Length: 482
Image (cartoon, rainbow, N blue to C red):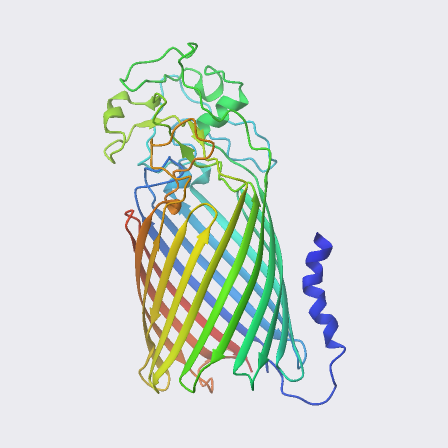
């Protein structure tokens, strides 16, 4: 497979030697650098890690740098890197309990948990509404992509490829792709075809209570559970050795740690008039492997509830007023090992006047998990002057519920597949945005030896009917080496 992925990079390079040596305009005159930085924040009450309820606060700071380098008149080498650092209240609650470690230092794929020492008098508390201080509260996602594109002498044929790698604390990915673009009809018509393959690997982490239970063969008096009381729904201490003691339905670690994604895409673009352009596109995506996230808890309504912490908070468990008790999970998320996704979309751009453009986008999506969605996006760039453009935009999204979703404590233990991840629930969302772009075709403004082609500043507000709200501020800059 690695040899196949390297072909994605080498194949376009081989075409270079077959091109004519006559003079021609270069595809890219000089090296260009694109920089994008963003700050994202969200809040919500349906955290998947804690079973569909709980604190979803998250902050993320990301920076992407893309460098395009002309190799010769026909070929361009692209190097792209992204660093994203986040803190997440939801992820922190892999281990919501004070005084114990969740064994999150699993770089060697060891399924044994690790623990910190706890004084005998130290109380154990936790809550889905309170962010924990565990190691999983923050992480850094890294991605690097190497791309290569080759254009024919006529500039009507473009072949491009890329190889990418990414990594975070519980997940890594290796991917590659090939794309072919053909222009016809004096470049008024364009057809694009592409294939992409991503080979992913889990380094699975689990909720503390489930991991401890499995690692110790069901012994509720070992490791984290030693000396810790477990309470029933009425707030009474249970007998850990009884047949009716807490026992998760998921009693083994995942064996398949791979998740592979294969995508085939097709696009068609046509200039209809001097003012109008339309594009139609579709992507066929097939996924196989471990598609469920073992971090995410699930609770069953036909199973008794058990808790660790302060029993006085049990009666207000689903309220943010609960700060000291946590419900032990019945299972971690289970989903099929295959998924077929099919989106079909259309874009229509219309130049209303020299200073006003209408950009519209619609996409219909469906998959074999019975999730259907519609997306509508409208963007209205307004040219304020030769160099400044104001860009208001609006996006509406609506989806149906996937057949494997149910809210907190609503699944049945007889089900084979189950999730309480609200990304798979039925909801609609609205996103409002405003952007300001500075463009300088002559690059009069300089940054050291780099001419500034454009600067973009954007703000977006996102509101989902599940209660999730988010804001993102981003700033981008495109530079050219003179």
